[in-house]
Length: 151
Image (cartoon, helix red, strand yellow):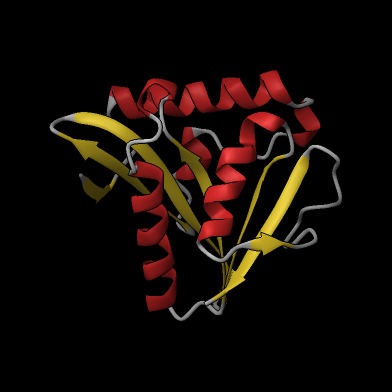
């Protein structure tokens, strides 16, 4: 498995992000969807990575700087057919390492509250993330689960 910074131009990466957005809109009302499209992921405060194995895209994830001491995990996704291969675990460990190297003191995330996202919540918990309240510009939302961990 290889994790690499990505410029968001490859068709398979764009397709995965479109799948991600489509799935979020299927599961939540529009006002509760916080996933970013390709244009927003190209923001200078966001670093985006992809995970590959022999030319096959296994997943993606981004790190958004909320402040000099606080980062947010964004757009973590693996294709449905390629889940449980370790890509999510690998890229999350990578992001935690990068966040620590940047001097962040805290790393947070928002994910869906539906049952389909329980495995993701369990993955985050296995890395020391715990439930928290809304952070940054988020507000309480029954469709969202907020998690955070100190670094």
